[in-house]
Image (cartoon, one colour):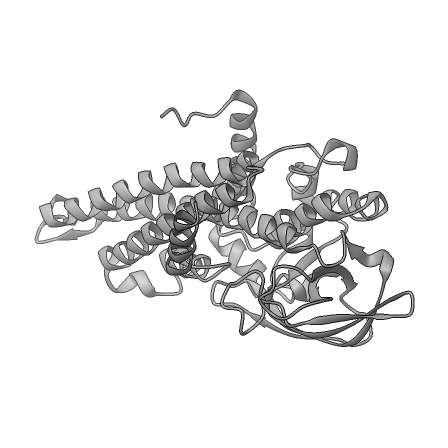
Length: 380
């Protein structure tokens, strides 16, 4: 299969690579991660100027009308550079949900502001007992006058500490696990009754556990039809998983390049260790895993825009499962082949491996997606 890019996408790829090479060296990345917010607002504005924040927003809403393959190019480059800016939470998830479910006024208020780098959003959906199941929502929203009263808890909300608003899923009917009865709301992060317990994640990202206690939300902040939000949630999570596959691919390639260079330069017994056949075989296996991961990342990107929800879910889960397996193998081999320095904080290899591990734990890992894939195959 020909995986070469069209001219426009090659230009996009080159632009991102040049920018990150100039502005996102490892020491600068560590400084961003150690800052109060965990990322750079200046870098975020520069990404907006490059058109990256509005890449997949429609031109009518102030964006560039790109698709999942454009997101793949961005996320692959971001993975290699270990970008800490909240692109996944704000652009892939937040802007994607508002584009799909928002009314004209909501899209006008939020999408152009996101594309310009002026607003950040986070998707508050996962709950502690959900185990990645999208329909498991215990948070409740009840009618209160002309609006809603929101109560509940959300766990590990990526990007929440710096977000201006949270896209919150809440149950307006039914019980946890029911497919019907889930509604989405845009909630001001600083609204009365919203409490965040913020923390840094293992890969230097930022997240928060969020509690909602009798939070008043106007009906104009409801996204889409009441009780019918699950298809929007599932589509958003599939797009996010496709983006994570691309990010993992960028890290896998970077790890392979760094490991190969180390095998060529590290000397033992009077020769480069890359001359030992056992290590050559391991490097060859890592290269094969990278090729497999690339093919499945392409599958995920192609599936992200699939209108058939079942087919989209099946293909994205197949891709996420295999990419996560490949990522674990490559990460472990890279650490082993680098020896003791492979786990030190000073070497970027350990940070790449941490990020791969977190990708596997975000929106379902290899085991969960294998189970989802098998269930979907049996239901065909």
